[in-house]
Length: 145
Image (cartoon, rainbow, N blue to C red; front, top):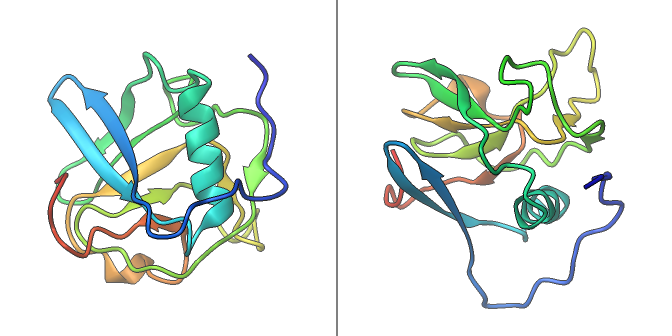
């Protein structure tokens, strides 16, 4: 199945929780997505998940006390769906935050997000605030990590 960059957000219902369930060999991660803060990002994540893009993929980067990163069909940090996403940088990197990976500022001054690679913060990472699109801030400290 071919995927493309969403040009507009899907219609999200007010007062509705949007949950993502990520099944791993270590257990289930449940994330509440935040379309009000990152509508294109949440739309993209839902489209990829519903389309089977993430099925069978692994977390290719695991750094203790930092992040786990997945969403790369190549399994080495270089793959993706063939597009990037506009930056929607609003939320903070608390423990358990779900965010899009991206290329560095020198090659990506617009801070566009990866089209599929995401990471989960394993602890508070305030030095990343204002640099990456977070679409589940996990301020409640429940669910994952």
